[in-house]
Length: 300
Image (cartoon, rainbow, N blue to C red; front, side, top):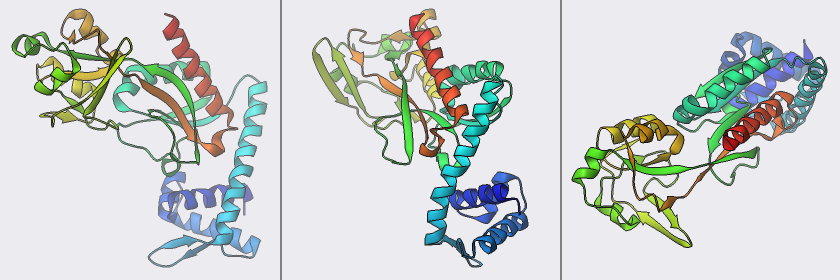
């Protein structure tokens, strides 16, 4: 039995919940996964996983062992990476998750730059607007919007604040009622990003004044920011969207900012990662790289 291999296999079985899922994730056969778990249990003299033909359950001893080996395996990886860093060539693999639209516009170009700087770190990018379970998918770090983390097994670092704008096409605005106050939005077709934590509640400030609007049910909603922009360009209504998504269209006049004196609330962008990745040099390098890139963007 290769002890490190067996420990890594056991870890992924616990995290993914089945031998089959772990085998697929590790590119092994189910027989190889089962063989390694059996040998590990024989070595320890205790059952780590109770399994039947229909289900498996991690034993109490298995859970204790899992928590301890995660620290050991991550410490080994960190030690490897520290030595690699001393030779100025960090190596390994990194799995990154990001929202589809923001990932395409902002994050993936930075990942490409990261790959140029660290060519020996292979990178797998998962772009999805739906929630990605980092443990289940084996993701090292996710770039996502949000606030306070509800999962104590996760850690986060604030990357930047994302400015949003309210905008619509000139054709739509020419045929719609004037919009000079957020309350007027109740009389408009407001297009909604359906995966927002509060898709129909929009908040604005003007100086010291703040107000929130509960929108009417949307005639159009979508789970992708680029699709939302396309709908606005086609004249379907008003959108609230990150400025980066629509800057070219605002400059060309395809879209026009609505009520510019009322500033929409900003969203925060975070790097989120499992707590046991805190000591991973690859994760630290990537997050530091992304944060430095955003600081340069803000300066520009």
